[in-house]
Amino acid sequence: MERLLPAAIIVAVLMVLLALMLLGWRRRARSQAELPRPAAPPASLGEPLWRGDGLYVATTRGGDQLDRITVHGLGFRARCAIAVHPEGIVLSLRGNDDVFVPGGSLRAAGRATWAIDRVVEPGGLVVLDWMLDELPVDSYLRLSPESSRAMLDATTTVLTPATPEGSPE
Image (cartoon, rainbow, N blue to C red; front, side):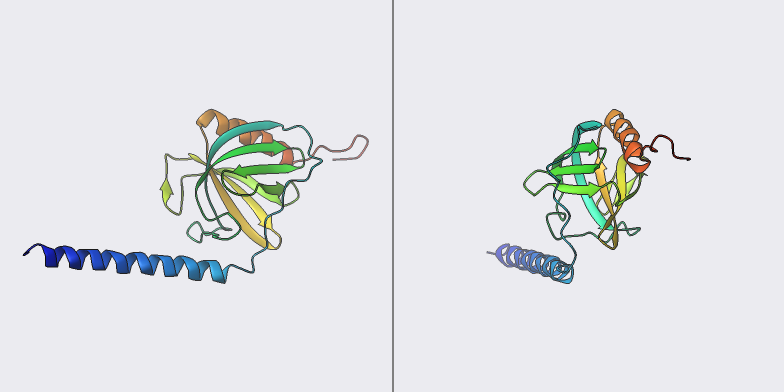
C-alpha cells in the first residue's frame, strides 16, 4: 500500500508528459498543413544511375537541422529504397507514398553528422538539399559507407546535367 501512491504519481506524470508530446506534435502538424505535398515520381523515369536501401532519418527546413517537417509522410523515420535517376531522386519510404526530388529542385548533396535526434560518426548521413516548391528543405538518409559514396557520385550527375553537344560550357 505504501508503494501504491508513489507509483500512481509516477504513472500520472508520465501520462501528462505523453499527452503534452502528442499535443506538441499535433500543433506542429497543423502549423505545417499548408506546406506543399512532395511530388510523386513520374511514370516516364529513365533507368536509375544508382539504386540502394537505407534509413530515411528526417526532412527539415533548409539549414535548420532541428525543425522537422512532419506532414505528408515526411515526419517519421523509415526504411527506404533510394533510386537516383537522371531526372531526379526517388525516396520510397516504407509505409508512405514515394517522394520524388526533381533534378531541377535539387540544390546540393553532401554529408552530415547529425539531424534532429540522430547523431552518427562524422559524415555518416547523406543530406539532400532541395526545394519543396519555394521552401528549402534538407532530407537526411543513413546508408552504408559504400552506398553513401555511390549515391553521392550518382547525385553529382543529376546536379550537373550533361551539356548538349555543340554548345559551349
